[in-house]
Length: 309
Ligand SMILES: Nc1ncnc2c1ncn2[C@@H]1O[C@H](COP(=O)(O)OS(=O)(=O)O)[C@@H](OP(=O)(O)O)[C@H]1O
Image 1 (spheres, rainbow, N blue to C red):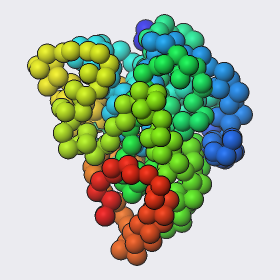
Image 2: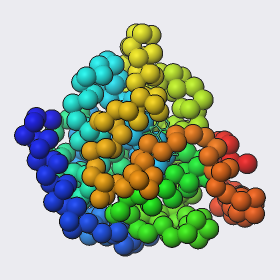
Image 3: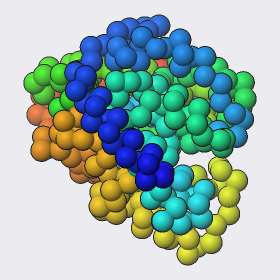
């Protein structure tokens, strides 16, 4: 990003900050979306990607930013400086985000960029513009176990002053289970991409696998992208995308978003980055109740989630 663009970007988000509020949810084709997304859904649906574009799809808080950083470094042969050219949401536009914006509007940014582009979405499979599938765009989906995903989303809803009010922890668990949160049901989301993964050649990854063996997962992404990088470069990418490195990196830690939007005194964007943190939040009763409902909602699929019990 040039100095002028960077200045523009910061002025724009500061100005937009004045119009920001906790956006209410509006249902689009059965999926609750924040109203600024719902109001502009027609434009989002009409977006036509280039066949060379890459889609990174996730339910919110499943490891999107981590994956965006890995992909950008892979595409830039591990060049840390190149990947510090701009904050994550500028390097990898967020397809459905519209103004007033805590981060730049995805469609506006995409118009200015030449393919191949790295595009982020939280839309469930059925709301992703058809052009992605017609043009056979490569797609990486990252899923995170439901309980850790819920915990991360709860803290994000507390700190992001544009997300709907999360309310107390106990009622948030119920909201999440009912899919009464932005981008809807976690259960439907992870299932929607799982069902299409083979037909659409979607690389379906798990946050827990990335934590367990980041190098193995970086290499998996590398092969999916048709790249072959040296062992040394891969090691560098693993190091640059560790939680600690990304938390310290102003281009990946979302410190680009002003405090009046992302209030990091409530909870930082790069919060803990752990598997199993749900154990510090769920009471045994809440966990039992969640597990019973989970079993019922997930009985029709066998997606290998771990660290849930
Ligand atoms: N490098 C790395 N390693 C491990 N964990 C990481 C990493 N980068 C981000 N994170 C954690 O991912 C959570 C944020 O998820 P997303 O990037 O999907 O958020 S968003 O939906 O794009 O807003 C959030 O999880 P929690 O800490 O559990 O809240 C981040 O801390």
